[in-house]
Amino acid sequence: MATLIAPDHPSAVEDAEALQKACKGWGTDEKAIISVLGHRNAAQRKQIRLAYEELYQEDLIKRLESELSGDFEKAVYRWVLDPADRDAVLANVAIKKISPDHHVVIEISCTRSPEELLAVRRAYQARYKHSLEEDVAAHTKGDIRKLLVALVSAFRYDGEEINTRLANSEANILHDAIKDKAFNHEEVVRILSTRSKMQLMATFNRYRDDQGTTITKKLLGESGDEFLVALRTAVRCFNDPKKYFEKVLRNSIKGIGTDEDALTRVIVTRAEKDLKEIKDLYHKRNSMPLEQVVAKDTSGDYKAFLLTLLGKED
Amino acid sequence: MATLIAPDHPSAVEDAEALQKACKGWGTDEKAIISVLGHRNAAQRKQIRLAYEELYQEDLIKRLESELSGDFEKAVYRWVLDPADRDAVLANVAIKKISPDHHVVIEISCTRSPEELLAVRRAYQARYKHSLEEDVAAHTKGDIRKLLVALVSAFRYDGEEINTRLANSEANILHDAIKDKAFNHEEVVRILSTRSKMQLMATFNRYRDDQGTTITKKLLGESGDEFLVALRTAVRCFNDPKKYFEKVLRNSIKGIGTDEDALTRVIVTRAEKDLKEIKDLYHKRNSMPLEQVVAKDTSGDYKAFLLTLLGKED
Image (cartoon, rainbow over all chains, first blue to last red):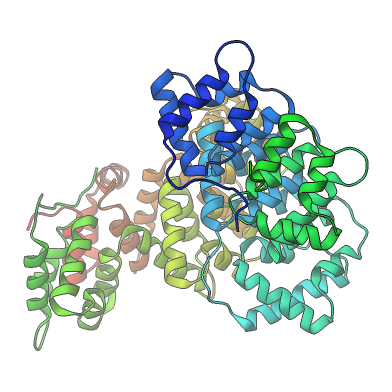
């Protein structure tokens, strides 16, 4: 379930006017921006962008970028984009880093549905005039390239049909690879990058039944290099995306300092999807409501915006 | 240009009635079937299937399969299918052979547009409840798997923008790999499987300017294993699909015996696209009209059907 609170039929024109007013003249009314955009779903935000363009012959996103700054600007920018376009931006930023954020690419590849991932690949091409897999391949090498390119290129079967015989034999292949510490074995990459999610669940379940422990735990027990970390991330994203996101949130706010990029990413990408369940998982796991921790770790408009997306009533 | 001759607005209902009449009772009127289906484009054939289903509560394709036989049946079956669905069938048949026909998978991956290939992947999933890349990966191994899975999974950028600096550096990478006979080098697979077709053309052109010979000629000069043959096929499909198809046709009918599968495949898949130019290339290259050679090498209804698709006036 979503945490986003959005009215059923807001007026895109009135919203665009409110945003223009908030941006007009000296200073910016950040609260007004939050109270509009923090309560509109993807389809509604799109209508607002269109209405704004028509009314003011100006790109709302560019205007907001010039009015806002810091983590708040970044969060609003990511939020206003269409989900597929946002993922394209997130992936591009992750790939182009000097030390690429492989986990962001894996997260997008493995937690989105096959159709959603395809939409990301379309949006990526429209924006960057390259394919996503092309840029991932050009910015990685060796085993990690093989895994990442295969994961982002996948257009998995999304139906219900599974093959239990296959789940059995592929659970054995995974077991043998882990036993031999041959994590980069091409069969491991093949299985994770081509099988449907339902089929992978059947394989992971079979692994657990046979081995008495989950494949995630087994992989976590291994100390590892970059590739093993990537592999673990992929398995966790397939196995239980909500649990995976809970952990990303937990890591982003634990200890001293906050990883604002990760915090923003999870809240912005999940607020319209399953942030309610992720929030509940967080509460259960950390004995503390997520909102309380976010409120403590962030400040100002950024804080107000995140809390709004987390479902705080104004 | 197409060779198919189709009227502008045929009546799907009248066509369905004519086909039902041709199939009714003892014996089948193959000529009537050819004179209808051999003159209808993909959209029109689809309308006929729908009209037939509605009129007779029967699947036209299944009915034709039960009425016809041999190479003629196979050709009609492939022709009646939607192009993306037909490619899915062709790929599946090629993959599932004891000795898989890699060139069919490469041909479909590299001569179809990015959107067409995507449609094939969708059709494949709908029909087989697996993804295309999943089945390719499960039926191949080693280097050939790396190449084929990457080629079928590609969703390339399809725009005009190219990067000449990149064409230069990647022409050098290809040159070094060929010089060192490291054809299976991961950079070779990366370049061929992720770059846009326009970018690949720029890279191949650059290669020719630098080396004084085409990459195709260079690769043909190498005696090679299965992988090298696959690589050559991919390069030829990108470089000049019409020339590639001319050669498939030439090989299918030269010498004693005919490769009906290859002959049918090229005629059926190209008749609505560019078979006119392929036919002209064939004539120029072999000093003999393609129709004449097809007429000599085939017989009966199969021959009549192929000649109809090749543009013969009734």
